[in-house]
Length: 246
Image (cartoon, rainbow, N blue to C red; front, side, top):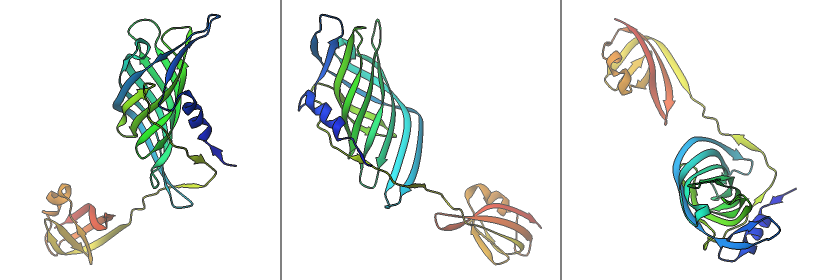
């Protein structure tokens, strides 16, 4: 059965068509006030990426990473920012989902924390963030939008204050097979029939010589005995190791 993120997007849109963040006190004297901030978190660390191909031929990239930067705006949304995010993106169609946690190190007192979930489309993220504001008795409910790449993090981020409109995607069942790189290897033992700084042929097998092995190949001459091991790299049979005896 398919699960849809449309409900999440609809909830975010319900705050306002242009985006809004509110802080709501949870005591008996309930109050709601608008807040807004902007952020960027482009310093990436501990980024782990996995790629697979779905049964319908789509490339699916899942990334876990930590991104740091700064946030500016209202007092509860101002300070150093850390985002821990997980993204699952169909790079064939350029759509996906991004979720995680946002922490803003407010200058004094308790930090602002929020969990967020949003839809990724063509390089942009839009969704909803819910958490606790700097004020210990206030919750934060906010539209959130930003530019996003798994390698580069979050740019032009907004918490309320005119956040960008979002899209909707569906998450459904499907098989996903990891992409495996198959290395083709070959080897030969015998007489060197041709040799140069960039190529060597042993017992009929010819391999391109990479720069790191050129000093070893330079010690060999035609009619020497040698053993070579080669791998197919970008369509080129490339020398991986060589042993010779003059």
